Length: 608
Image 1 (cartoon, rainbow, N blue to C red):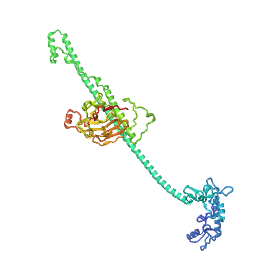
Image 2: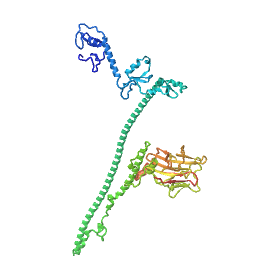
Image 3: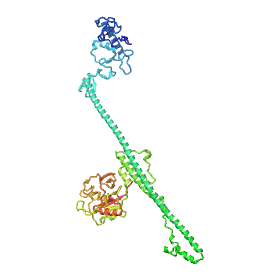
Image 4: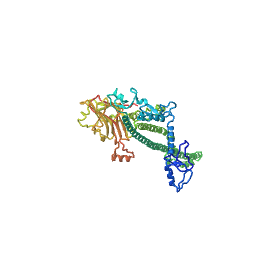
């Protein structure tokens, strides 16, 4: 502290104790100056008073008086320093003084009445004039011309609420005489208040959006983690499928090898037996040749019984015992025999698997309502395979996927047709037989006989689809039915029928559609011309589509296609060693209501 200088590098006098500007400077008898509070506090901490700089000790604490001359000198120095700091040259972007003739100093204030900006020196001169002491001063601004009315050359004092513009006092007596105006400062305050509210609202929105961003990022991260987990599980599923195919391949290979080994063993056994018989033939042939060479006839007769011809039941054919055994055809047992079977089975598996995978990929791509674009080099590339030589067209909707993957060639079984209907020779059309009638009215006489005609082929698994042109028929019914249906029952799901029907009501000249006869009417925007029927056996679903508009009309879910077999039938099948499945066979079915011989239902081919 004793080495502290009283002046800074800039020449400003400082207290050597607090090293700040002097506050109530006092002088000690030794001639050094300190802040009155600083030296008093310093002496309070020592036993004997002394000067902090020269260490001169005093017998008693001196009576300190403020050094007015030194205080005034410090004040003048500070004012000079502040004035020199304020009078710095204006930098680019700062408001310059309008009065400075040469290099312009930085402006400290702007006078709204004089319309000029002043540096510190010229500001003191401006305020030194008595008539200017009441002028309004603001922080320096550059756009003074924007604050002045160009017509009256006066400062803006009011804000016109009608024209939403700043005006001067003279404008209120001119073109804005009938307008409502408020003081300019009042509008500025109101605008600032509104801006504060807007800023607060924007801050709230910013926080909400920031929170949404955080939530979306978290959701994306969780989705990424979930997707990675699902991809791992999918990889495990496909790995299990590959391992299952590998096990089936090994099982088939082992089976073929076992059959080949069995065939080779059978051949070896036959070969050993043949070799033994050849050896025996050689031995007996030698004996016979020996008897033939002897001249002793008695010996010949006595030697003949040793051949034991009679024991073999044919004395005239001594070789009858040595007929060669029938050997299996080894070429039929070779692995090449099974190649065709394997190729056919694998081709069918490949086609089914490809169709299922395309259906799965399409359903996944449409699960969130958007399609995933394929790479340009794969978009138009047809799918060809060693087993499947057909071109795959990328489906545009679910119905197209169903049509490409699950379409079946359905024909009607004429033997299941009612006497009142007739099936065409190709099994594709159904029409009313001449001179017969079906039902007098849908809601009249009770249905005594089911008019549905079944398809020739049934299905117990997988998916199948067919479509029927119904535009040529006023009243029709189509769908699927169980093999074990009761033909005298009405077409209801509990009876084993899953159908959709349409009726033309003559009194109202309109079409009425039902999921089944006892259900509530189904509202359709337009009458379908061709109806597609899609069955997913494993999911228990039966769906009906309008082929022209490619929309879903009606759908059954949770259908029970399984049924318990009678105990006697199950017992008989078990005794016969035949498997008895609980899966009921489903048959395509359609029928016509009415007696109009012009009504025709036609099973149409599915256009890919």
